Amino acid sequence: MTGATAQTGTIEASGLELHYAEQGHGEAVVLVHGTAVGRELWREVASALGERMRTITYDRRAYGDSGAPEPYTGTTVAEQAEDAAGLIEGLESVPAVACGHDLGALVALDLLRRHRGLVRGAVVIEPPLLALSPTGPAAVSALREAIEAGARDADDPAAGAVDAYLRETAGEEVFDALGPDRLRAARAAARAVAADLGAAPTFAFGRRELRAIDAPVAVMVGSRSAPIRREVGRALAGLLGSSTLHEPDTGHLVPLEAPEAVARAVAEVAAR
Image 1 (cartoon, rainbow, N blue to C red):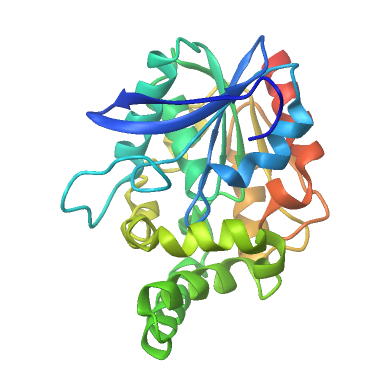
Image 2: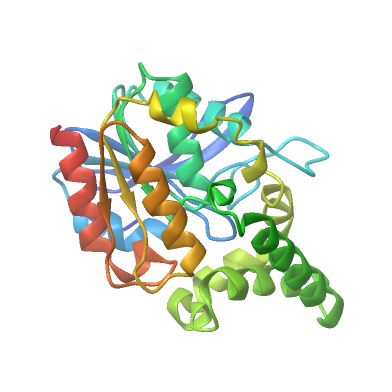
Protein backbone atom coordinates (compact mmCIF):
# COMPACT_ATOMS: atom_id res chain seq x y z
CA MET A 1 0.00 0.00 0.00
CA THR A 2 1.25 3.49 -0.77
CA GLY A 3 0.59 6.91 0.61
CA ALA A 4 2.15 9.25 3.16
CA THR A 5 -0.16 8.15 5.94
CA ALA A 6 0.10 4.40 5.35
CA GLN A 7 0.99 2.43 8.46
CA THR A 8 1.92 -1.22 8.83
CA GLY A 9 1.75 -3.56 11.77
CA THR A 10 0.76 -7.00 12.99
CA ILE A 11 -2.32 -8.09 14.88
CA GLU A 12 -3.31 -11.40 16.42
CA ALA A 13 -6.31 -13.12 14.88
CA SER A 14 -7.27 -16.78 15.31
CA GLY A 15 -4.07 -17.26 17.28
CA LEU A 16 -1.89 -16.04 14.39
CA GLU A 17 0.03 -12.87 13.70
CA LEU A 18 -1.37 -11.23 10.58
CA HIS A 19 0.58 -8.48 8.85
CA TYR A 20 -1.51 -5.52 7.72
CA ALA A 21 -1.31 -1.99 6.38
CA GLU A 22 -3.81 0.84 6.58
CA GLN A 23 -4.30 4.38 5.38
CA GLY A 24 -7.02 7.00 5.25
CA HIS A 25 -9.94 7.86 7.49
CA GLY A 26 -13.69 7.38 7.70
CA GLU A 27 -15.59 4.28 6.62
CA ALA A 28 -13.43 1.16 6.79
CA VAL A 29 -12.85 -1.22 3.92
CA VAL A 30 -10.95 -4.48 4.41
CA LEU A 31 -9.38 -5.78 1.21
CA VAL A 32 -8.95 -9.57 1.08
CA HIS A 33 -6.60 -10.97 -1.54
CA GLY A 34 -7.08 -14.26 -3.33
CA THR A 35 -4.68 -17.07 -4.20
CA ALA A 36 -1.02 -16.42 -5.06
CA VAL A 37 -0.96 -12.61 -4.83
CA GLY A 38 -0.76 -11.14 -1.30
CA ARG A 39 -1.92 -7.78 0.00
CA GLU A 40 0.18 -5.96 -2.61
CA LEU A 41 -2.56 -6.93 -5.08
CA TRP A 42 -4.45 -3.93 -3.70
CA ARG A 43 -1.71 -1.32 -4.15
CA GLU A 44 -3.48 0.49 -6.97
CA VAL A 45 -6.94 0.22 -5.36
CA ALA A 46 -5.60 1.70 -2.12
CA SER A 47 -4.09 4.56 -4.10
CA ALA A 48 -7.42 5.13 -5.88
CA LEU A 49 -9.28 5.24 -2.56
CA GLY A 50 -6.73 7.68 -1.16
CA GLU A 51 -7.69 9.26 2.15
CA ARG A 52 -11.47 9.13 1.67
CA MET A 53 -11.85 5.74 3.38
CA ARG A 54 -9.93 3.83 6.02
CA THR A 55 -8.35 1.21 3.76
CA ILE A 56 -7.01 -1.94 5.41
CA THR A 57 -5.09 -4.64 3.56
CA TYR A 58 -3.51 -7.73 5.07
CA ASP A 59 -1.60 -10.84 4.12
CA ARG A 60 -3.73 -13.92 4.71
CA ARG A 61 -2.14 -16.74 6.71
CA ALA A 62 1.19 -17.94 5.28
CA TYR A 63 1.43 -15.01 2.84
CA GLY A 64 4.08 -12.33 3.25
CA ASP A 65 4.98 -11.83 6.90
CA SER A 66 1.77 -13.37 8.28
CA GLY A 67 1.99 -16.51 10.35
CA ALA A 68 0.48 -19.95 9.83
CA PRO A 69 0.12 -23.08 11.94
CA GLU A 70 2.61 -25.90 11.53
CA PRO A 71 2.13 -27.97 9.53
CA TYR A 72 0.04 -25.86 7.18
CA THR A 73 -1.25 -27.92 4.30
CA GLY A 74 -4.85 -26.81 3.81
CA THR A 75 -7.44 -24.21 4.73
CA THR A 76 -11.14 -23.44 4.38
CA VAL A 77 -13.19 -20.37 3.53
CA ALA A 78 -14.58 -20.39 7.07
CA GLU A 79 -11.09 -20.44 8.57
CA GLN A 80 -10.03 -17.52 6.40
CA ALA A 81 -13.19 -15.63 7.34
CA GLU A 82 -12.45 -16.13 11.04
CA ASP A 83 -9.02 -14.59 10.47
CA ALA A 84 -10.65 -11.62 8.72
CA ALA A 85 -13.24 -11.25 11.47
CA GLY A 86 -10.51 -11.19 14.10
CA LEU A 87 -8.65 -8.53 12.12
CA ILE A 88 -11.76 -6.35 11.76
CA GLU A 89 -12.54 -6.58 15.46
CA GLY A 90 -8.93 -6.16 16.55
CA LEU A 91 -8.48 -3.02 14.46
CA GLU A 92 -11.82 -1.62 15.67
CA SER A 93 -13.04 -1.19 12.11
CA VAL A 94 -16.64 -2.33 12.67
CA PRO A 95 -18.68 -2.16 10.50
CA ALA A 96 -16.43 -2.51 7.48
CA VAL A 97 -16.99 -3.06 3.80
CA ALA A 98 -15.39 -6.38 2.88
CA CYS A 99 -13.83 -6.38 -0.58
CA GLY A 100 -12.35 -9.62 -1.85
CA HIS A 101 -10.80 -10.93 -5.05
CA ASP A 102 -10.95 -14.59 -6.11
CA LEU A 103 -10.80 -16.71 -2.91
CA GLY A 104 -11.00 -13.43 -0.99
CA ALA A 105 -14.42 -12.85 -2.56
CA LEU A 106 -15.70 -16.01 -0.86
CA VAL A 107 -14.22 -14.79 2.41
CA ALA A 108 -16.20 -11.56 1.99
CA LEU A 109 -19.41 -13.50 1.35
CA ASP A 110 -18.75 -15.72 4.37
CA LEU A 111 -18.31 -12.64 6.54
CA LEU A 112 -21.69 -11.37 5.37
CA ARG A 113 -23.33 -14.69 6.13
CA ARG A 114 -21.76 -15.54 9.49
CA HIS A 115 -20.44 -12.21 10.84
CA ARG A 116 -23.12 -9.80 9.68
CA GLY A 117 -22.51 -7.49 12.62
CA LEU A 118 -18.95 -6.84 11.48
CA VAL A 119 -19.59 -5.88 7.86
CA ARG A 120 -22.04 -3.50 6.22
CA GLY A 121 -21.68 -4.88 2.71
CA ALA A 122 -19.23 -6.40 0.26
CA VAL A 123 -17.53 -6.10 -3.10
CA VAL A 124 -16.84 -9.55 -4.53
CA ILE A 125 -14.49 -9.68 -7.49
CA GLU A 126 -14.20 -12.76 -9.74
CA PRO A 127 -15.69 -15.13 -7.12
CA PRO A 128 -14.66 -18.78 -7.77
CA LEU A 129 -18.14 -20.19 -7.13
CA LEU A 130 -17.67 -22.65 -9.97
CA ALA A 131 -20.50 -24.83 -8.66
CA LEU A 132 -22.87 -22.23 -10.12
CA SER A 133 -21.82 -23.36 -13.61
CA PRO A 134 -22.49 -26.76 -15.23
CA THR A 135 -18.89 -26.66 -16.50
CA GLY A 136 -17.47 -26.03 -13.01
CA PRO A 137 -16.14 -29.57 -12.40
CA ALA A 138 -14.32 -29.58 -15.73
CA ALA A 139 -12.74 -26.19 -14.98
CA VAL A 140 -11.53 -27.41 -11.59
CA SER A 141 -10.02 -30.52 -13.17
CA ALA A 142 -8.28 -28.48 -15.86
CA LEU A 143 -6.77 -26.18 -13.23
CA ARG A 144 -5.45 -29.08 -11.16
CA GLU A 145 -3.96 -30.76 -14.23
CA ALA A 146 -2.25 -27.51 -15.26
CA ILE A 147 -0.76 -27.05 -11.79
CA GLU A 148 0.48 -30.64 -11.65
CA ALA A 149 2.08 -30.27 -15.07
CA GLY A 150 3.65 -26.95 -14.10
CA ALA A 151 5.21 -28.46 -10.99
CA ARG A 152 6.40 -31.55 -12.86
CA ASP A 153 8.03 -29.68 -15.72
CA ALA A 154 9.78 -26.90 -13.75
CA ASP A 155 13.26 -26.91 -12.24
CA ASP A 156 11.63 -25.46 -9.11
CA PRO A 157 8.38 -27.45 -8.70
CA ALA A 158 6.86 -25.03 -6.16
CA ALA A 159 7.45 -21.99 -8.37
CA GLY A 160 6.29 -23.96 -11.41
CA ALA A 161 3.00 -24.78 -9.68
CA VAL A 162 2.43 -21.13 -8.77
CA ASP A 163 3.22 -19.97 -12.31
CA ALA A 164 0.83 -22.57 -13.72
CA TYR A 165 -1.94 -21.42 -11.37
CA LEU A 166 -1.44 -17.80 -12.40
CA ARG A 167 -1.31 -18.65 -16.11
CA GLU A 168 -4.43 -20.84 -15.96
CA THR A 169 -6.52 -18.27 -14.06
CA ALA A 170 -5.31 -15.02 -15.61
CA GLY A 171 -3.58 -15.84 -18.88
CA GLU A 172 0.00 -15.46 -20.06
CA GLU A 173 -0.18 -11.68 -19.62
CA VAL A 174 -0.40 -12.13 -15.86
CA PHE A 175 3.37 -12.11 -15.48
CA ASP A 176 3.75 -8.67 -17.02
CA ALA A 177 0.70 -7.39 -15.13
CA LEU A 178 2.07 -8.45 -11.76
CA GLY A 179 5.59 -7.22 -12.35
CA PRO A 180 8.75 -8.69 -10.83
CA ASP A 181 8.11 -7.82 -7.17
CA ARG A 182 4.60 -9.25 -6.94
CA LEU A 183 5.58 -12.27 -9.01
CA ARG A 184 8.54 -12.95 -6.73
CA ALA A 185 6.26 -12.73 -3.68
CA ALA A 186 3.76 -15.10 -5.30
CA ARG A 187 6.42 -17.71 -5.96
CA ALA A 188 7.67 -17.34 -2.38
CA ALA A 189 4.13 -18.09 -1.13
CA ALA A 190 3.95 -21.55 -2.70
CA ARG A 191 2.95 -23.17 0.62
CA ALA A 192 0.04 -20.76 1.01
CA VAL A 193 -1.01 -21.28 -2.61
CA ALA A 194 -1.05 -25.06 -2.14
CA ALA A 195 -3.17 -24.68 1.01
CA ASP A 196 -5.60 -22.37 -0.81
CA LEU A 197 -6.29 -24.77 -3.66
CA GLY A 198 -8.78 -26.88 -1.75
CA ALA A 199 -10.49 -23.96 -0.01
CA ALA A 200 -13.10 -22.79 -2.54
CA PRO A 201 -15.12 -26.05 -2.48
CA THR A 202 -15.47 -25.67 1.32
CA PHE A 203 -17.76 -22.68 0.79
CA ALA A 204 -20.87 -24.52 1.90
CA PHE A 205 -23.59 -21.98 1.13
CA GLY A 206 -26.05 -23.04 -1.55
CA ARG A 207 -28.41 -20.94 -3.61
CA ARG A 208 -30.92 -20.60 -0.78
CA GLU A 209 -28.27 -19.27 1.61
CA LEU A 210 -26.97 -16.86 -1.00
CA ARG A 211 -30.48 -15.52 -1.62
CA ALA A 212 -30.81 -14.89 2.13
CA ILE A 213 -27.92 -12.39 2.11
CA ASP A 214 -29.65 -9.02 2.25
CA ALA A 215 -26.65 -6.71 2.60
CA PRO A 216 -25.54 -4.53 -0.32
CA VAL A 217 -23.11 -6.39 -2.57
CA ALA A 218 -21.30 -5.32 -5.72
CA VAL A 219 -20.27 -8.24 -7.93
CA MET A 220 -17.39 -7.54 -10.31
CA VAL A 221 -16.19 -9.71 -13.19
CA GLY A 222 -13.81 -8.77 -15.97
CA SER A 223 -15.43 -8.60 -19.39
CA ARG A 224 -12.31 -10.31 -20.81
CA SER A 225 -12.02 -12.90 -18.05
CA ALA A 226 -12.72 -16.58 -18.68
CA PRO A 227 -16.32 -17.28 -19.77
CA ILE A 228 -16.98 -19.39 -16.69
CA ARG A 229 -15.95 -16.48 -14.46
CA ARG A 230 -18.42 -14.18 -16.20
CA GLU A 231 -21.12 -16.83 -16.02
CA VAL A 232 -20.57 -17.35 -12.30
CA GLY A 233 -20.48 -13.62 -11.53
CA ARG A 234 -23.75 -12.99 -13.35
CA ALA A 235 -25.39 -15.98 -11.65
CA LEU A 236 -24.28 -14.79 -8.23
CA ALA A 237 -25.53 -11.26 -8.85
CA GLY A 238 -28.90 -12.74 -9.80
CA LEU A 239 -29.11 -14.74 -6.58
CA LEU A 240 -28.17 -12.04 -4.09
CA GLY A 241 -31.03 -9.97 -2.81
CA SER A 242 -29.39 -6.53 -2.99
CA SER A 243 -26.64 -6.59 -5.58
CA THR A 244 -25.24 -4.71 -8.53
CA LEU A 245 -23.17 -6.22 -11.34
CA HIS A 246 -20.07 -4.50 -12.71
CA GLU A 247 -18.19 -5.79 -15.76
CA PRO A 248 -15.13 -3.58 -16.34
CA ASP A 249 -12.99 -4.05 -19.43
CA THR A 250 -10.41 -6.30 -17.76
CA GLY A 251 -9.27 -9.87 -17.38
CA HIS A 252 -9.14 -11.78 -14.10
CA LEU A 253 -6.92 -9.27 -12.27
CA VAL A 254 -9.57 -6.58 -11.95
CA PRO A 255 -7.86 -4.76 -9.02
CA LEU A 256 -4.71 -4.27 -11.12
CA GLU A 257 -6.43 -3.40 -14.38
CA ALA A 258 -9.33 -1.26 -13.13
CA PRO A 259 -8.50 0.03 -9.64
CA GLU A 260 -10.67 3.13 -10.05
CA ALA A 261 -13.68 0.95 -10.87
CA VAL A 262 -13.06 -1.12 -7.75
CA ALA A 263 -12.72 2.02 -5.66
CA ARG A 264 -16.03 3.32 -7.00
CA ALA A 265 -17.76 0.02 -6.21
CA VAL A 266 -16.39 0.12 -2.65
CA ALA A 267 -17.60 3.69 -2.17
CA GLU A 268 -21.04 2.82 -3.55
CA VAL A 269 -21.46 -0.11 -1.16
CA ALA A 270 -20.27 2.00 1.78
CA ALA A 271 -22.88 4.64 0.94
CA ARG A 272 -25.82 2.22 0.74
